[in-house]
Length: 92
Image (tube, rainbow, N blue to C red):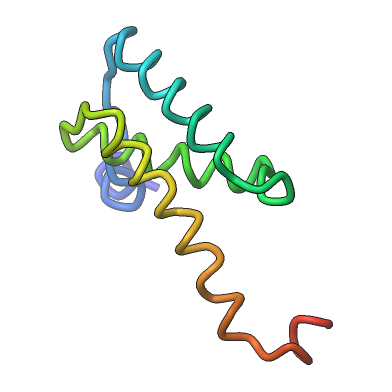
């Protein structure tokens, strides 16, 4: 995949963050993850939250609450579709 294609496909490919912002994002990720029920604290979910935090920060957001909300939105989006699946299909 060419660099331009990767940038489009991955959003903020190549974004550079200052060490202070990286520490802020790490703290926000830890806070957001701690808010999840234990069963939801998977590496996949943490990666989804981190991805949303990174995307939001790449757009210039620096407010910890806004970053955390963006990260937690990933949890809502990931779990939203499971409610649309019938109990019979979930059991498969």
